[in-house]
Amino acid sequence: MIHFEWPLLMLALPLPLLVRRLLPPYQAVQQAALKVPFLDEFDLGGQRMPGAQADKWRLLMAVIAWILLVAACTRPQWLGEPIAQAVSGRDLMLAVDLSGSMEEQDFFINKQPVDRLTAAKSVAADFIERRLGDRIGLILFGTQAYLQVPLTFDRKTVGTLLNEAVIGLAGDKTAIGDAIGLAVKRLAGQPSQSRVLVLMTDGANTAGEVTPLKAAELAKAVQLKIYTIGIGADEMIVQSFFGNRKVNPSIDLDEDTLVKIAESTGGHYYRARNTAELDNIYLRLDELEPIIKDKQYFRPRTELFYWPLAAALWLVAVIAWPGRGKP
Image 1 (tube, rainbow, N blue to C red):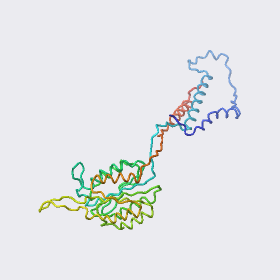
Image 2 (image 1 turned 45 degrees about the vertical axis):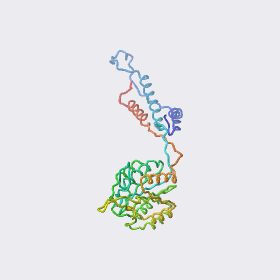
Image 3 (image 1 turned 30 degrees about the vertical axis):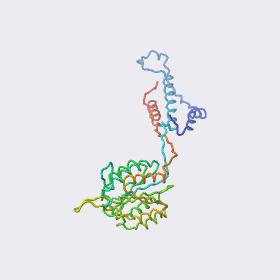
Image 4 (image 1 turned 45 degrees about the horizontal axis):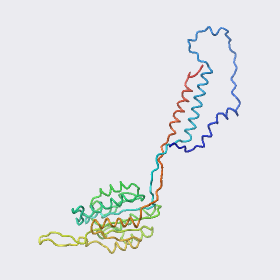
């Protein structure tokens, strides 16, 4: 449908009539002229146009040009179909561990062994896609922490850049404290109703300038809730020279610290030993941080004012063209 942003400007349509009525009429200067009683005998080549008819056409074009100009000033717009958009007011940051230990293949997808990062990507991608209405950011950390994606509603971009992350990109060690500190820095100044950090790691803090517990204190000060996820199987079978034996691939996982980080900020610690548990954790996060239900609607707008404006300018150019419409 067509919508006029400033419809009150339509009141300017009778303005030329008011000007003509209120201002004194234009008086043409009378000059002496030679009267020729036999003017009809001159041959004008059939090019003479009655002056009254030319003035009528010019007046008509001027009226149409004025109407078009006023229509352009009302800023006509074409309104598209209503589009639903959910906005929760929540800022959610994902922090994913890319340290060397994430290449341990103790997870299975479709009965095929995969490394921990691949399993995390497959589950986190679905979680990101479900977070309609949240602004989502992505932090990748290893020896150092990097902001890969700032807060955005573009869930597709966040999922794509997470999928492109590779092990060792940020170093082989684990800087959990720096990852939390970076999240605090990026979320502290943002006006939001809720700030959430989901931190996934498979080890202990072995690098960085800020300790995890100190970073958790900073997070609590800015009301940043942290959910920590410890990833890695409890046991796996490995082959050696002496045959098969069971080992604990998650022996370096510092669960005590992850629990303290989560509890001190009002979050929760989860343990993911396989892909199914990891998927269930993200489903629980959907329940604890529910997606917004109430939708806001907006209608896309396309400006149309330039069409009547262009037509009005064209008519003015025709009226003002030298010799056009003169008797």
